[in-house]
Amino acid sequence: MKDRSIALIRLIVPLYSFVNLTLLAFGYTPLPFETNQIETALTALLGAGSLIYAWWKNNNMTEAAQRAQVTLQEGKRQVRRNGQEKSG
Image (cartoon, rainbow, N blue to C red; front, side):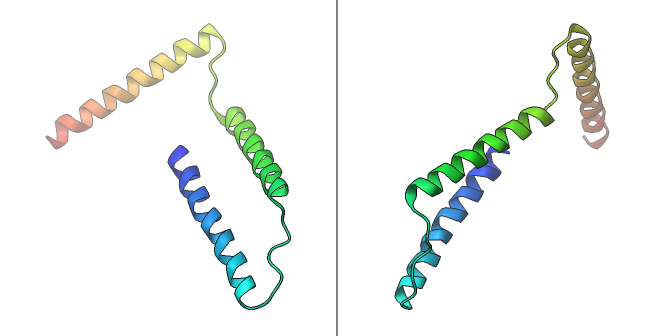
């Protein structure tokens, strides 16, 4: 997820600059956003994104949930090992 977010930011920032410069080159008014407005919007998006991620992420708070998570991870490891043995 982190790599996807970074890639998206790396795409949006130059795209914003490109559109802004293109509008200036053709004599149009640049995009009507000030730096503070962009910063506020990005902060709000980051906050909302982290809230949604934390809500979606499996947070094992109880002992029973933690034991179930360990059992699940062990099962996944066993499936991976069995798959490797068959293919190798």
